[in-house]
Image (cartoon, rainbow, N blue to C red):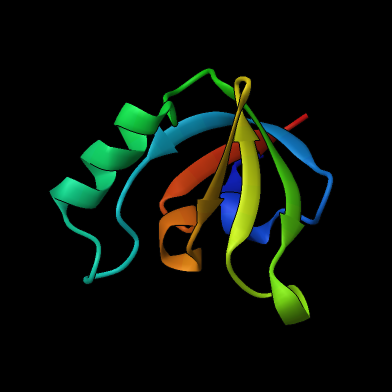
Length: 82
């Protein structure tokens, strides 16, 4: 089952399926940046925690690196929960 990274609860682990735009404000440059950061198919990812009020930013771990993502960016990463 594929879901969006933004929809995973805190502490959940998954594997990246693909990176694709699901909103008009996300262009190729945003998608390329996510790929450069390591959000590539097959990579393990974990949602560590969310910002104040359970919103953004999302602290995520991809490989050994922690990133803070906006919801807009997290909605571009399709994952398969493990």
